[in-house]
Amino acid sequence: MQSKITFSVNKLFFSAGLDQVLKSDEVKGGANSRTLKVTTDSSVYFLKIYPQSLDGRKRLKREYQAVKFFNSAGIDRVPAAVYADYAIPAGIYSFIPGDRVNNNNTEIDVKEAIEFISGLKKASGLKSAVDLPDASEACFSVRDVLGNIKIRRNRLGKINHPHLKKFLTERFDLAFVEITDKIVDSECAEKILSPSDFGFHNAIRGEDGRLYFIDMEHFGWDDPVKLLSDFLLHPEMKLSGKLKESFLRQAKPSFKTETFERLKIVYPLFALKWSLIMLNEFTREGRLRRTLAQKSPDERGQLKKAGKMLEKALSAGRRFPFASIL
Image (cartoon, rainbow, N blue to C red; front, side, top):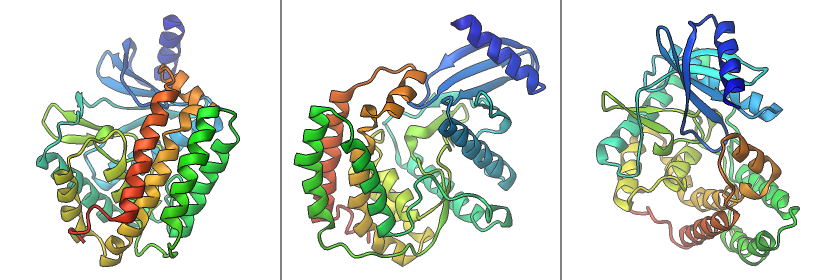
């Protein structure tokens, strides 16, 4: 297996016009791809291998386009785009030496996240940004979020798994009705270019001490309410309540008043959506992506996590946890 990987890496780097590969080492990546640190005669690169499917090629195209845009916009908190091969599909990026950010986050980390968002806001006004695509599952209204939740719920409902079915019918559906019972549709007040999976779980603390943000597979135009909600809700993020409040307080000047008014309405909906995302483990696509990333499935564990997120959605629907910030 290793010889095949080495051969394909050598061939890819030759096609990219890069120096001879000396070695390639597996590095810890996300749940949806395989990642390697590749050392050549003259440099070190980050190689990301996406799922061999139409979805995998779309992920590569979106991420490579995003990184190239950031590079041209002068945003230096991301790697450099080097080469993309859509047949494999795989992308070569500059390697950022450092460590994945752990959950011992600080006010300085939050400040750097806000600085990155400010850079996104500024880059959103560039002429070159106009033709960039909408983010994956972009939601520009309450109606959009509800529609996305229903699609995910229906897809999971077709899977013949007793524990999953019980969770959906006895817990999720009841929570959905409670949270959406009196909800009113509203359109987003502004749009922003967003990684659409933004947070410290997708950050590297460089050797210079600064944070660098990675994983732009879902990048594009989106409602900043989604950006804010996902940062607060992502299951891989373990921010304290104090840091979450600090994040919102510092983010507030960057956005319109209407955006924060909508946050308390849409936040519980995104928590509902996250509870379903955490059940991707049960889908065929989810299993295939886990196999590529060489990670074992954990259906029981994901059901437990989805239940906790569902409780968070219900709690937020009854009383928005950050009302004092608004």
